[in-house]
Amino acid sequence: MKNKVMLLYPPGKLYQRSEDRAQCNISESATGAVHACNDLGYCAAVLLEKGYEVFLRDYQTEGASFKDVVQDVRDFQPDMIALSTTNSSVLDDLAFLRRICRLHPCICVIKGAVFYDLEPERLGDLDLSAVSCLIGCEMEFVIGALADYYLRAEGDIGAVNGVFYKENEAFIKNAFVSGLNDLDALPFPARQLMKNELYVRPDNGEPMATIQTGLGCPSRCIYCLTPLISGAKVRKRDVESIYREIEECYTRYGIKNFFFKADTFTIDAAYAAAVCDRIIASPLCGKIAFTVNSRVKPLGMPLLRKLKQAGCFMIAVSFESGNNETLKKIKKGTTVADNLRAAKLIKKAGIPLFGFFMIGFPWEDKEMILQTNRFIHKINPDFIELHIAMPYYKTGLYEQCKAYGVLADSGFGHDYYAPNTTGTRYLSAAQVEQLKRRILLGFYLRPEYVLKKMGAAAKQPKVIGSYMRYGFSLWQKNLLRK
Image (cartoon, rainbow, N blue to C red; front, side, top):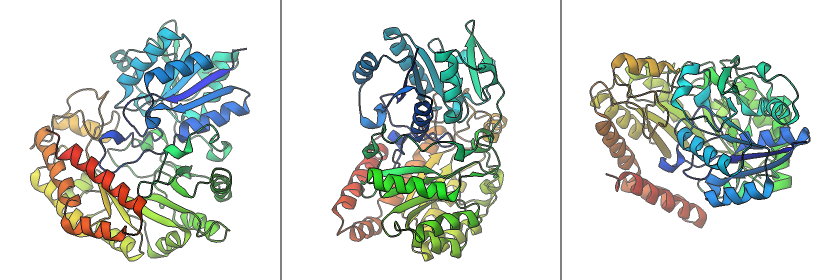
């Protein structure tokens, strides 16, 4: 019986392959860090329960080479290879699979938001000769059925949600329905197969596990893929299940730092508070720390106090813009005043703030972007990340870019750091990039900012070392680049 499945992230640049929403190019990021490969970990756990032999390796984060992959393939002799891709890396990842299959022919499946509900004719832009199946949905919920079909000749692949499968050299598209899956039905990720030390908290370099707490978002931001792929309804895990996974990470793997992964953890304040209460009432309170994503609304001081008490060391908020017209057009559901209020509350609660911002929307001129810059300095977050608007296919932003005449191509191979646009209606792509560098460097290289951060970390050598590495990376990627 064919029984061996190899799960991997290929070698090369660093991408946030586990998150369909962001697909962030970490290699180009100013301050980003790679999160744990939970999608592979979940898949491994599902396959192990079904009796498959599983090999898992994150070559990109490990800094391994193609030669390492070849050696592992020769040693393990997989019957199936499955990998996660991103919109930016998909062309390279498909080329990688073609190279592997020339050395070791086997079933290859590839997962990524880039395949979500595509028109079949768009697949003609990709060389899929090495691929048997494309997964455009939540991989962990279909990998078992795919393995059973391809390796054990069991089940009906035509009934598997969210995939394209090859038949007679043509791809057949199944139904794509989002928001169906119960997160509590999954086993915990197979962290015994993951190199947990690769995924670290950015400031102190300690191992940091990702805990999936929920999926889905009712908001309709025009640049975001979440409502398409994960659905508009928020699916939340059972609070006790979340705690038991945290406890397992702490007791079995010695992990004390966590990223609570949700499309927006605080959108249901009562639920977020319940997670905090479970930690506060536990023996782990004061021994663990975690970070969360949050929307500007709803966000109030009672929840912020609970987050602080439970061990929240950072809140990441997607403010996006300091211009009300842009906030309205992207359907963010907030105003500049709302953004300012949320930032003040977080600071008052004593929790460090990570702000995400986006420029280069098709209607933006230089002054609108500079308003965002002034807003950044007004709220003065602890850290920022600045993206250039990327019109992912099937989003409202994609349609807006077409309407404004700034869409350059179909989008395969692009991301927030090299979007498939010609710029905005008023600015070239080069001018937008120049403004981005100006904003990033203007924020991080302020003498008062540098002195404040170094002073706060004076008694923490690991933190100082991390700040210096990120500072050099920022300088290298923005000041030295032509």
